[in-house]
Length: 260
Image (cartoon, rainbow, N blue to C red; front, side, top):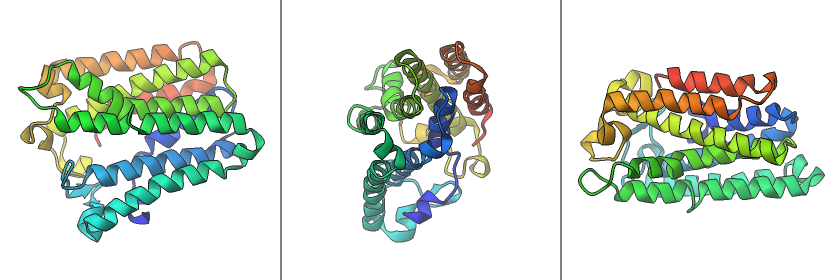
């Protein structure tokens, strides 16, 4: 569990939760256990995603993947344990005792974003999709569920836990969705144009494996244009927020410029 959790990474999901909470006046210290929990969930998904039965990757964040170090059985169990531990961490957070209604809503958000309606369902769609048997529009639906659903949940969690209004939480959810799509499109682009040194994992594997990605479905120039459009849409979703939302806007800019 610790090997994969502490291997590095951008921590986009916990940062998003904290920034969203801050944007509505939340207390970062109170939000931190929930931010850690979403990183646990994300890390579990990476461990399972790298398995031979899924994407069969040998490297993650520049290091051998969990199953390459510890074997497939232990890797599966490490992922299972991280997922389970995430919900214990949230349930025992001080904010869950101080404001159980907010905590329950936030926990439900994470379950939806990570489960069959979100990330897991999107991963199943990804396994079934391929050029020649999938419509171009399917790549967006896969990204909405596999990547964007969890990021949208993180943004809404921050809004809920920070005490945001219904409208603010909805706007943060829209921001998270566009940010998630942006993250996935840039990831697809980097698989075509990046290097192992930048990415910390194998590149050009998606096309070779027949995976259904934005560049495969629409071409690289269209994927680049879509990333620019998604960045504008994400920024528009939080245009009404004060300067406290500036870290959210910076997150968009960093994802647009990322090379790893």
